[in-house]
Structure formats: C-alpha cells, structure tokens
Image (tube, rainbow, N blue to C red; front, side, top):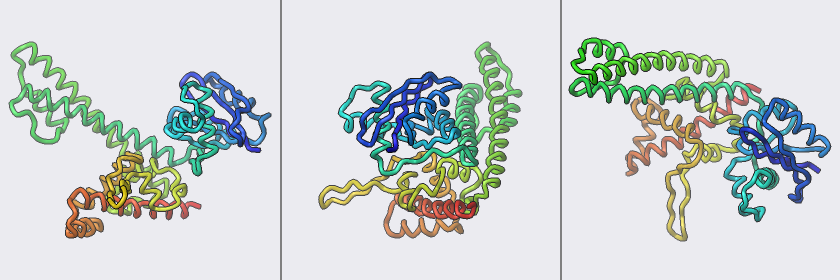
Length: 342
C-alpha cells in the first residue's frame, strides 16, 4: 500500500501527516526548519514503506523542502493551497485550522485529485523563472523610480518632463537649476538621488536582458521565432510554464494561462466571460506578444485581429481572440522544443 504523506510547510517548522488509502491517519511528525529537516522526515517515513509526499505550495513556501526531498530520491507532488483548504472544509468535516489538519488535508487532496504536478529537480526552466522574476522586479522598480522623479521634477520645473525619462537628460536639467530656498535645495538633492537610481536600474535591466537572452539560447528554445516574442517574453513563458508536457492539450494550456474564456451559461442563456484565473505572468507575456503583433501590419496576428474586427467584435474581444490563438501557437512550439530535447 502506498502511503500519502501530506506536508504543511512553514518558515520555522513543517508538519507531516501520513495517511492510507482509507484516509485514516497512520502517523504524524513536526520538525523544525533546520539543515537536518529532510534527514529527519525521511528517517521517520522509511518504516512506513512505499510513499509519496504531497507538499502544499511546493512552488512557494514549500519550495526548498520539496527540492530537498526530490534530491533525496523521494516522489513529491505539488498541492495548491486552495485545493487543500477546500478539502479541509468540505472533505474532512473539520473546519478547525491547525497544522496537523492542514497536513492531512494536503494528503487527502493528493490522494483524491485526478492530476497534480510532480515536483521536478531544478533545471534550466528554474533558471529562466528566476531570471524572469528578477527582470520583472527591476522593471517595476524602474517604473516606481521614474514616477517619483517625474513628480519631483514637476515641482521644480513648470510642466515637468513630458516624455520618457532619460537619466543623462534629467541630470543635465537638474544641474542647470539653482535653488533659492531650503525646500528647493532638498528637492534638487532628492531628484539627483532618484536620477542616480534610475541610471543604476537602467544598467541592471540591460544586463538582465542579456542574461535572459543567453539563458533562452542555452535552453534551445525556438519561441523567439514567433513574431512578437523576444528573449524576455520567451524567458517568462518557459519559466512560468514549466514542463509543457504536463498539459495534455492546447485547451488545457489556455486554461492554465487564462486566455480561455469562462463559461457562465445558465439554462438557455449562453455566456462566455473573460477569465481572470490562471497564471497572470504567463497571461501578461502572451498579452504583450499579441499587442506587438497588432502594431505591425505584416505580422501573422494582425490579419487575424482585423478579421475579428470585421466580424463585428470590439477591439478588446478581438485582442482576447488573438491571445487565445497565440496560446495555441506557443503551446505547439513548447511541445516541439520539449520533444527535440529528448
């Protein structure tokens, strides 16, 4: 009999509960989050026989523990936190929340859920996901800095700067101003600091883009052959998709990335609404690729977009249709690349 071991991970400790096929608890253990956590868990689990681990949020708080278990030769499943919570309330009859109940719910979810992603050892996909996250963080930091700089320059110069900020131009503008009050002097100093921050972030973004391009090339991906997808978007798509073969079809992939509409029909009233579900980073990458195709008349997506407008669809609906079509194209390319690597 295969034992399911559910794990409720925390920053300072992890609680594991082992259950059988009848969902009855066999044993449970709480370990401190230390360097010996995996040895302690595996040593406790060995007498239980053949086993599968189910870790809640194996891509989040349980990431390190999951990777350590995989490295120790264990089979690990990733259980979404929302699924475990639903099982705890509806499946077990226990709404009281504590670590053992949470861990048992994770195990039951792994036992009853039809398909859960198996945790894989870190590979080039993990590298691309890390680089994509870093690039996104740098981009958001750059936008925040630019907004603050725009605001403070508008307090120094009438009309401010009415175009995209360039660090060298802003620095030249600030150097040409002379403070007449202590407040203006403080504003000039802060503006100079923000300009230095902007220049540093621009340098980091350029380096980040180069790293992403090198990593995408090293992965052997051909996603950049798709119009509108450069190394940054390719890195995001590969990193946040993970193993593409875990999606049985293009429709399944579209559900995952949120480009497939949601059916909200009732009786004879047929309604399909925009999906706000799915991986939002992937959805954003597909959105940017679609917008890029629309901007160029010779792109393969522009003709499809225009045909949807000719059918009477609004621009938003036509864009959504193009995103759904692009999702299919990306899925086929990801599958082809995965097969080529085998």
